[in-house]
Structures are given as structure tokens and as C-alpha cells.
Length: 187
Image (cartoon, rainbow, N blue to C red; front, side, top):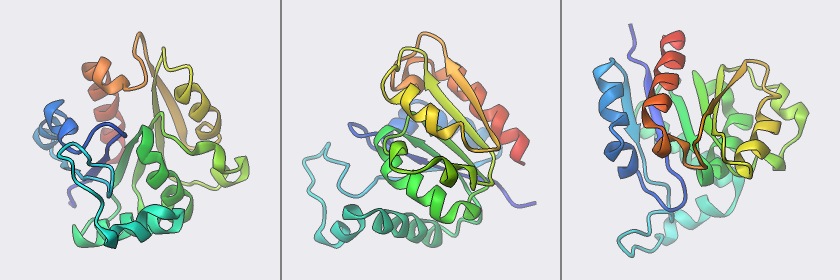
């Protein structure tokens, strides 16, 4: 059977390396998944890089950000991956979910930005299983995004006790457990 691919998007002050450092990619690989973390255009400022002009069209509009993810999936040959999206990467994942959600096997939003830009009706149209993860102490984006995302019919919520906005960093074991449980059901 096809190996389930899981693609990770990072938050604003991080890059793809964060998922590697956390042990998430290795853990998923050990459990039989194809785990991939990508850098979002213009977000990887850690080495003082500037966004290539070629990427600007992607970054500036929601349609462009959807097109960027579609291109990534195509280049990597991903058939129905599970998309994991934290914080700032919601600018990519939420428009993608609402425009092209049928291309995903599942969605795991972790306190993403941009959920307020869309309507309850739009979230109710989402057909895929969704695991909403947020930190108990994230009373800003965590609770705000939850209000929108729980309109998704096949969604369920995991709140990580004592965790802040980057809840997967605060409680990595609990995060990994919730993620593996969810992925196991999608296989």
C-alpha cells in the first residue's frame, strides 16, 4: 500500500529544521510515514537570506500561496499527503484547505493564523479529517483559530495542557502521541 506522506510547514521565527530538531521527522519515518518539512518562501530569514523575486508572486496573494503548495506537492510527487501547519504557515494552509482540501488526506492545524478571513460556511465544506492541536496557555491564536476550525465537520481537538503557542515545542511527547494516533487512523 502507498506510504502516507506527512508534510510540515513551520511558524514565523522557525524554518524546516525545527521539525528535525524536535525529532518529529525521524519519529514519523520510524513509524512508516514519509515525513517532509519544507521552508516557506521568504520566511527563512535565519541565515540573512532574502526572498527571491521569483517567490514574491507566491507570497503576496492567497491564490499564490495555494499555487506554491500545489507546486511543492507536484515536485515531490505527493498523493494526498497530510498537512501539518503551525502559526504563520496558516497563511498557506488555510487557503489551500478551503480551495483544494480534497488533495489532502488529513489536516493538522496548530494555532494557525488567518482563520478569521473565512466563513463558517467555508469551513463546513471541508470534507477531510482534521486534528486541531493547540496549547492551553495560547489564549490568542490558539483559542481564536479553534473557534473557526471546529466548524470543520470531521474535526477533533487536542489541547496540550500547560503549553503555549508553540505547543509542540513545549510538550513534544504529547504532541507526537496525538499526531501518531491521528495518522494511524488515516492509514
